[in-house]
Length: 309
Image (cartoon, rainbow, N blue to C red):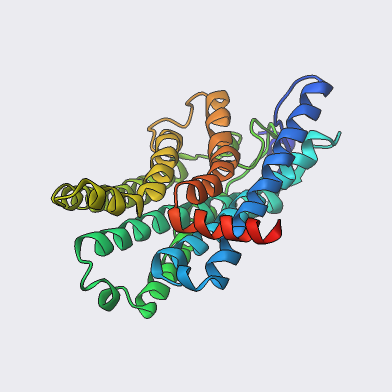
């Protein structure tokens, strides 16, 4: 093998969205607008959750955690994407690429765990309303939220450590707008079978495990709601979890395709398109879903805007 083939690649090029200059500027304006609204919407949720007395409950505590997570999840990938759209240089160092990948996927795994925790919270609130305040104490709420954060960052440490040891000595163009695992490791000149297997197993356990907890919780929730004699009571009970259920459905539909797949060679272009839904579109929609479908938050917003006028 020649000396050139032993040279370790220390810089990568993020291909992003190839196209005309007009397309690049259009995407920049669109993504920047959505990113600003993502930050604004989630900061508003956190502010309301921490300042409004009627929102001082475990459900809104988890929602504030989720909003805080969404801010950093999008920040881990979107600013670099925006910079690449308007810059001639689309390079990123190996260390920066590894860190971006680690934070994007750690925060993504934390999101799965939070979804499961929020589903469990709604299960207790609807199925055991008389014992809810006793079971879901402030201490347990903090423990569940903290476990979600710690678990998300620990899970990705294993594949991140394996990727850090890979050798890259050939092509350095990543066919994505951020350092996603799939289009990155296929550039490696080393054997990636172990990395692929570990990533598949990790994502399968995290995604399908959290999905199972969420699904079982909602089976019991729906079963309990259907037993409520009055339609008004059913509607009131379902309204407390409809926002979370909507977000969960949107999120899981795309992420199961992205990460629970047997082949690393699945269409990278299709993967890139679906990833946009997860990293930009879904976080953009979430604040609207949680505010427009939540009666208590809507009432508070009406009061805030009425005072402002």
